[in-house]
Length: 80
Length: 414
Image (cartoon, rainbow over all chains, first blue to last red; front, side, top):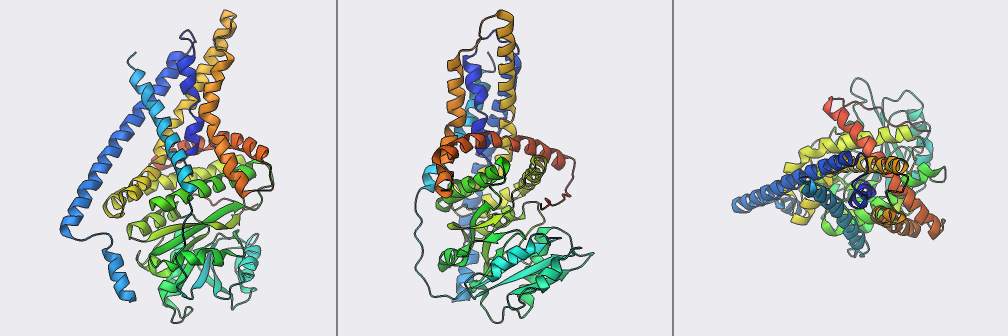
């Protein structure tokens, strides 16, 4: 159910890029936006870590020969 | 300016969300071929976990017992109700409606516990006779759920594929004409189903909802003694664990269950906070996804979906930033006596924020032909703003998660 509101929050981006620097409080707005950006960079870092973890886990699984489809194979055998 | 890279990163956050949403919209337009009929005769059990549902249960049971297929029953799990819930179930046709009563102190331990008890009953009792669990389909319906009459005909072909473990149908609001809030909830479920769930059929990451989820009994058996967890979003958990077990989840666009929309904003935010907190709890599924979900695309999409609360919280900062900038512009304009922004300044924010409104309006109009295309687009604009309730719900849910509060009152019927 999530994700759609992300588009609704693009409002500050263009505002910040185009508005003149003399606008009072613009520094606060910048800090808020930078905070979101920093959080997103951290998110990307964690996502990369998870991707690497998956590759490692899957590689290990294929070496040991116990794959996630193992259960289904057994179930198929049971059903036949 | 040392913060420029970080500001661009926040642009990246929005770009990623926009690209993902638009990509899924394009993917959702593709058609799904059905497997040919295998001739299997399947038996459907509609499970309704009920706690004080006298206001809505009668209508729901009437809908189920009126289904044209003669191969289905309703199993009402009365979770120690204090009202006439059990009486209503008992007064229905006993051949079509089974009643299972739970009693305190074992009852009222959440929807998941009640559903697990229902499945235990199905396994242990002789109610199913000698039917093969592979050909028994369990459907979870909320007590206020009103199923389309053709629901079994619509769902059954998905189970011709022996690896289909579950199929989710669409969700609508039957009181969607009772005000803007109800209408937007209807739009929310239509958009979620017709774009996101439909697209995930091609990725392999269709999620289960708490209402209108059809599952093979054998698929539930593969999840162990208790298929449903005690999470606040036990449906999300179950869908992910089915995929991790190697089953395929399907999404059926041609049938729906209608439920009651929440008509009060505060109650709606509270409901979404509960979902949000449940979504946070589901973070423990990440190792399972990484380790066992077959298919890299499905795994990455599930991880993205599980992590979406983080993105919600991050993006919630951006409207604050915009608000500060707008207030600053107004104050600056008053002080200097000349406008600090031109009217052109608003075109960019509109394009970035409301382009999706046109897409959502298009999707909703295709589903709800009773409203005009123009009205659907207007609703799409309201829908973008409606999405902001997730910000409030998100921070509320996070606060409850941090402070260790796990008890929630169910959303009242009205």
